[in-house]
Image (cartoon, rainbow, N blue to C red; front, side, top):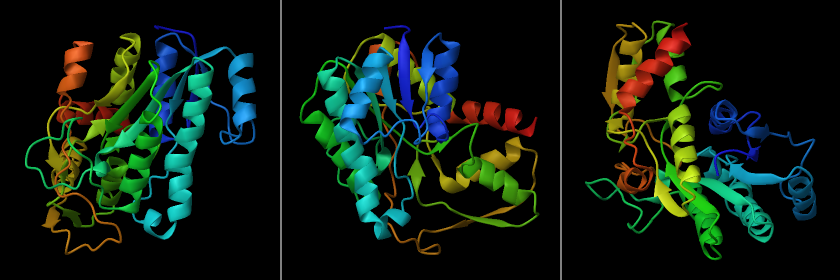
Length: 286
């Protein structure tokens, strides 16, 4: 499957959704990214009609409740978007022979490992957000089909929408000394790379669960520092611990993802996050 018509849920406003639209259009896909006023993703019958009328071959679900701390207070909404919506999209796609590309997160893990997490490792989420995203995976995997592709990724940055890197650079412009957590380590990932690598898996017509991230690892503090260096700032960053910056939701101390399965199936090696970051910040500065 190299081209066709794709429906991108979250393609209008989402950080990852907009990256998918950009990358897939360049690759020759016909993209549909309707707003909420045009298509109710929770309406099973409306979704079926939309897919049939437009001959949709692939549905990419980039919709999620991503407010990690907010989810602790808004559990019902978190589960509605992160579990119930995937269940509906899965049913529609399975029954209408449409490929489903669904995204999950590194926060399904508890962070107690010291080596990168593989797809074989058992998830143990620490937060409502992590639990709700895992519930979305589980509901899809209960009735898997050849067209189901679930991709876990992490620590996203990229164009089209504000993100951690953008915020750090914006704050540095004010001249403030930034305090950033150094005892949480993960896999910084560029949304454009994630979209491109996702398409490589789609084109291989593979299915199942994958980890797709840029190569390497970093703490939030290291990611912030490298971002400011790229942007030409000498603003100092003060490393702090998670205890110094209490948050409502617990985060894994270590959630680096192992993308070896992606490399084996696609034949591609993900590029280092530092290289992806340099490209992003260079274009951001322009």
